[in-house]
Each structure stands twice: as C-alpha cells, then as structure tokens.
Amino acid sequence: MSSWDAAPRLKVTGHYAGVVSRAAGAALDVAIVLATFTAGVAGVDVLSRMVVGASLARDDAGVLSTVALATWAFVYMYASLAIAGRTPGKGIVGLRVVMADGAVLTGRRALMRTLAFPLSVLPFGLGLVGIIVQREHRALHDLLAGTAVVYDWGGRVAEVPGPLSEFLARRAGAEYSSAPIAERATDRAGAGRRASQDRRS
Amino acid sequence: MAAAVTGRVVETLDPDAVIEHVDVDQLLDRVDVDRLLDRVDVNRLLDRVDVEEFLDRVDVNRLLDRVDVDRLLDRVDVNRMLARVDVDAVLQEVDLEGAVRRAGVPEIVAESTGRVAGSALDLARRQIVGLDVVVDRVINRILRRAPGDQPQGPPRLVLGRTP
Picture 1: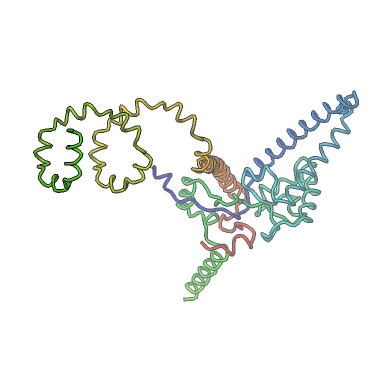
Picture 2 (picture 1 turned 45 degrees about the horizontal axis):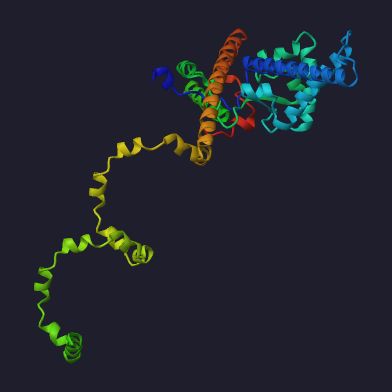
C-alpha cells in the first residue's frame, strides 16, 4: 500500500455538494429521462400501430412530444424527490436534497423545488450560477424552495480522495475538516479573544 | 439264534456302564476326520442353516470391537477403490444446486459482487468530490473568500456531528 492510499480521507457526509457533483447528477438525470421517454414513446408507438393501425407517436410540430417530455420530467423529478429525497441521477453520484436546515425534505418542498427548477434553467441557466458562487452552493430553485443539496452516500461515508485529503490537511484546509462548525467557531472566537488580550497587554 | 442272543444281551446291558468303559479320545483318534468331512455335503448342511436366526444371535458390536479398523483401513487401497467409482454417476445422484444453495454460496456471491460494485461507485464518487473541492477552492480564491468562513453544510447535519 502506498502512502497515498494510507492517507486518512476527510469525511464530507452532510456537506454542501459542489458544482461538479451536481452537474454529474443532472447529466445522469437528463440521460435517464430522455432514455425512458424514448423507450416509452417507442412502446406506445408499437402498441398504437398494432391496436389502432396508426402511429400516435408521430408529432410533426413537436408540441405534443414536448408537453409529454416536460410532464414526464416533472413526474420523474417530483416523485423521486418526494419519495427518496433524491433523483436516480443524484443517487448514483451520492447526493441528497434536504431542507435548508438539513431536515428531511417534505413533499411540499419537493413540489416547490420541482416547479421552481425551470426558473433556474430557462433564463440561460442563470439561476444555476448560484451553485458555483453561492456559499452554500444553492441554485435559484433551491433558494426559492428552501432546500439544499448535500453529499449522502447512503450507508457509507462520503469522503474526499486520500491524496487531496492530505493536501488539504497540509494546507490547513479547515473548510473540509471533520470538526463541526460550532467547534471551529468557538476556536475562532477564542483566538480572537486571545488576540485582543494580547493587544491590551 | 444270533439275533435272539444279541437282543437278549442288549436288553441286559446297561448302556451307561458300557460307555464308561469306552475311551472316547482313543476312539476319536482312530477316526479319519478328513475322510469324514469329505463325506459331508457342506452346501446341503448350509441350506439347512437359518442364516437370519444365526445373525440375530451374533453381537455385531462386540464383533466390531474386536476388529482393528486402522489395520483394516491400512489394507484398503483407496486410490484403487476410487478408480473403480463412477464419479459422473455419483454426481448425477447429488443435488448440487440444492447443496450450493444450502451452503449459502448465492448470498456470498451477491454480497461480494455488491461490495465490489459499491467500492467502484465510491471510487468514482470520491473523484467527483475531489473535483468539487478543487473547483470550490478556485472559486473562493477568485472571489477572495476565506475558505474557513465557508459553511460546511446545513446546521442539522454538521453541527450535531461528533468529529
């Protein structure tokens, strides 16, 4: 075993998920939605040809298909969030949607988040910029629905790779340490008091 | 006349008194046993033997106690014995599927497969988390934010955790 493998990994379960994780989860969700929708349309087309003798899947204008796809995407997203707190894509990447304070996502908030999602995407994806620049990595639909996305690998602990963990530890990357925020806040307050006492003396 | 005399003698004589005067050992010495046995039809004799009744009277456990099993096994050529065994025929009689199921092999395979799949998934997830960390550090540097001031996660998930 190399020294890299032996390096202790920083644990990030419950931490706000970053942009790469969320993009990977979203890409998987888009792929799943499109694949299942295509398979469903093909199935309906075969059935309609056999039963009615005409292709119901034929939609030159694309309006019906667009509405059907949007409806399927809504059902996929809302149902999976309301039931499991994560879409299948998020589940594969190891993410979970929670309330802003970390509580379990309610069905109402899942509905709000699903309805608000187009507001983040449609104006050139501007609502998604929050995932990159916002401190809690919350997009517009997260802010509107009062939700957040965190790392959650189910029964296993979410971790940073060993080499990067060691690098962060070397560089005193306190933002990814496993110490609770309150403890670090206490440490900072204590350090501030000590600094002011030093100045007075 | 002779018959009458003989009959009279036999009636008068005490058989036990006669037998006491006979030396049985000397008499047996004069018997040719091999010749006697040659005249015995052993098969006919065995036909008259009730083998089941005979075996009922045999104490098998006592008999086996007298058998030196180790010595007996030493004399057995196991390889030669196995060479005579038709393994395919034996295996055809064995419920291998049931035996494998009873041994819990499917569960072990499923568990190990799941563990390997989970490890591979975790490996990929760790790389993505690593990229998150790197991108986050770059963004913090661009926006001139102190990394330590970044909230780690929702209060309920981070504050109550023991390090």
